[in-house]
Image (tube, rainbow, N blue to C red; front, side, top):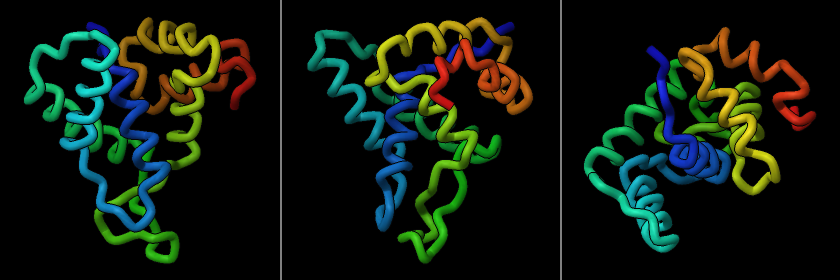
Length: 135
């Protein structure tokens, strides 16, 4: 069985990590903001509570698998926020919707049994033609 991820939500969380110095990381409000952005584009959000729960699960998964880590105090860390690791930066560069052609790497990731499993991701991300040279 393959794991399907909500890449837009993960992208949102990674951007919040990237810009979160001095702020606590709060996945539930980020999920609400994500839902509001989808609604503004005319896309329905069926279950906001499920989206919030998923955001919290993604935070845990991204931390446990080394995509994010606790932000050092000298970089604005407060014990409740994160920084992107090199792996997290690679993931963001692959799925970033502001980069033309982002759909292809997302599709390649979706084709994996578990795209965010560390060895699988590192293997897929190392393929230059998949990453579009962005890494």
